[in-house]
Amino acid sequence: MAKSISALPEQEQQYLTITGKASIALAFFLLAELLSTVISKTDSVIYLLVDLTLFVSFIYCIVLAAKSMKFAKHISNLGYWALKFNDEYVDYVSSFSLRATCHIMVIGGIFLAYSGDSNWFIGLITPLKLTDALQILLCLAAATHGALILWKLRKEELYE
Amino acid sequence: MNEDLDNHIHKLRLQHKISQQELADAIGVSRKTISTVETGRFTPSVVIALKIAAYFSVSVEQVFTLR
Image (cartoon, rainbow over all chains, first blue to last red; front, top):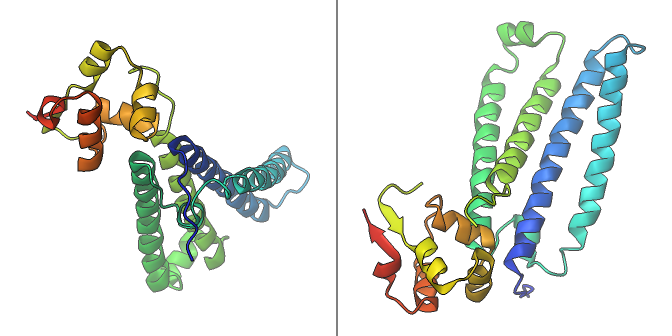
């Protein structure tokens, strides 16, 4: 039986904001992970910065995941797992960002499915591999998801 | 932004001397919903439109009008 909870709109907004931040952190993690495999000089400053970004984004992802868990009691199962909310604007932002993410994944997926093993594409992305290209696509999708949420839920005191 | 829809929520709020947060709490939505509806960046559902009109004790046409 579905859990029926009347969540406060502000709680839904807070939860979606955390989700957006988590997507941005995931994007940074994926990008840093990719860069760390590409950079050959392991003793360079850039490599250290990339490693630091990797570590910080990983920790931040865990912190946000822990933070999001406290909303499990206050938000419906549908909101918690499928990002479907009762508050109209929060739900609009959630579906808008998911739609954009879905489009990026579908378009990128179709492109990689049909051109991923083409010689011109392999030559273009060298020294990256097809799995790295997929990681870039995932990074782009996560960044778009997070950025759209944070942009649409940004604080505005102008019209108070 | 909906170019065809105009609203008078800001004017009604000033008349009733209430903040966006108070209006949001009264009709059970987030402050962000009120803020974005008020600035025309988000078009609300009929339910929210009716709730806002009922809160101010006016008709929906007095809150939302077509340009």
